[in-house]
Length: 517
Image (cartoon, rainbow, N blue to C red; front, side, top):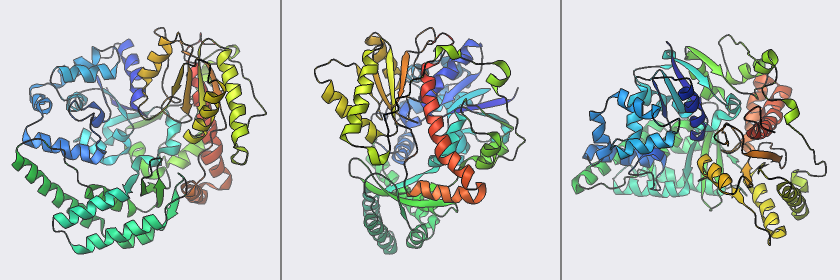
């Protein structure tokens, strides 16, 4: 039997797949997502991805992580049994492994070494370093790959993103000074920081910065990788000498990663600014091919699953797929999955989300429509906005208009989980106003359902056409793709299909069974 690597966009999407595996009485299966989120020691710490792994490595070297030490006493079949015992609930498996004294991540990694079916988040397939570190000595050709929510591959480029902030640069300069690294490196980082500050964007859109100029400033990426390694070794020796576990952070690791991706052809460099005032630069691939070509073409077979894919010829060109492509359209061959008569569509023609029309009156008009929709139903209402900024402007109007009214409301943020949403909806007898952003964790690939598989969402309100944010990065993507795909196809893929997919995915949250109305 072929080994299957089934990848999903977010950890929330693992649960439905595990539930189906349980229903079909599958035996050897496991799952994987972020080790940082699973860690019983460090999950509550405010650590970056790089700092988490530095600290994890240190704790293991010290022998201070009892959870990791226990892995030597575990067999893969024991971890697989834990996964099979929790009725498709990944978080319960993680908690149970930790209670038993095992590191959840390394236990699940061990399970994956013998599992025939592995459910994992996208990085385990599309990040070569993560794939190799997890599955060696296996390679892509050992797996049949299934990509769930494959429409997300239209925007997969951000998976390889490398970010650096001005704070990272300042900390890196301190490391250079403390550990006696070449003065030229300090000068390079001072110049880099000045260049980023000078090109700081207005608002939160990405602003183009000269990639070649940054390459000239930083020079050889390997020199930065070597410097980061030198600092890492020195810090580990210091901490080992102290004889107690201490968080370890190597800022130069982020500089090295930034320099490495910056040197890759087909990438662009941009400055960014966050809500809390942090400023920095990011490097992003301009085409999905940089991310998808190797995994999809070198795997034994690749299945792209989605109800909202663009035409296969366009998808093949966009993702640089070299395999023979076959299309299996379930509804075309077997009829509608959900009865069409169970869905009712209302178009509010007076509403618009055009940038030129955005203002207090527009936000208040949206707020009134949303409130009337909420008042007119007894089930949960999912409101989907084009962006966080647009959502918060409308929410302020909702709170102003309904300030004397009790609203059961959920607002999506970074900490929101699918479990929290289901619990909140059920706590309020299902009548809840759920506010989410198109393309986010609550609008794609997840199921907000009751125990019978029926959707808890009764109405989906698409509050504005969810086009991608127009900034320098989108313009550069457009230019890069236009040279290969032409003007017409590029516009369709980057703008029209992107908006249509986000809207259709959001609507799909209300249609999870044939009985949903």
